Image (cartoon, rainbow over all chains, first blue to last red; front, side, top):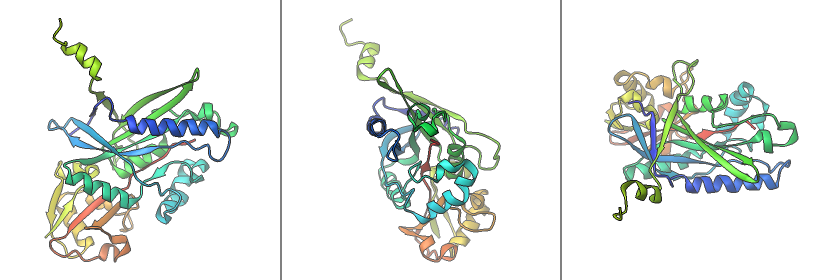
Length: 214
Length: 93
């Protein structure tokens, strides 16, 4: 069971990306203010392929963020995450933590429909270009940060996706990448990348299989 | 006997099995049984001090054991124990 490949329909993440771009655009409008906190995330539901090599993502579910309201979560940030990974994480607007009851609800609903919670996806904006002046230079990408790896390791979900957004020439570009959980035992080991493979869009599929007209 | 629903995050410990059945009168007993049958569960569920890790929640049917009697919460035969890791993430600005 390697789970080194994530399969999904080409349109699977459309709702997530729409939400991500909406938040990103909003953050551009409020640049330099306290509201400048683009973040979006969701749970990835799907199944394991029988070959043990691939996971199939079939749905994205959304939950409630309790990063700023749940006492247990605030304690984790205050006692562990901020001391380990830096003061920026003291800002409750950074990152997300899904309501535990929502995770249970989504899990039970998924299981009842023959699906599993495979992991999650969250966004990284190009903070080094759009962040407030005092935070410029802090580059994000589709690569997990140390904080990401800490959470990937401790939660253990088999699929952890990052959507990187970048502004260039008045357009917004995005990249998707996926990672497995780092070893829970060997703390020096990092997260291994997961290959993402999409089905072909309908037009491309038609070109491949032919439309009967030669 | 108690059914334990194993999350995908812990499936490597059960070689892919999604649900296992174990014996135990309390949550702590269940964790001991899991550890005996599938080594590695204790480390995933409990800290070195023996307390429940923040990164995993344990539900008896729909009740969070943290808000009952914690690891001493009784587990009557026939209930299902749900192990549910948290879903969290965050980007450094």
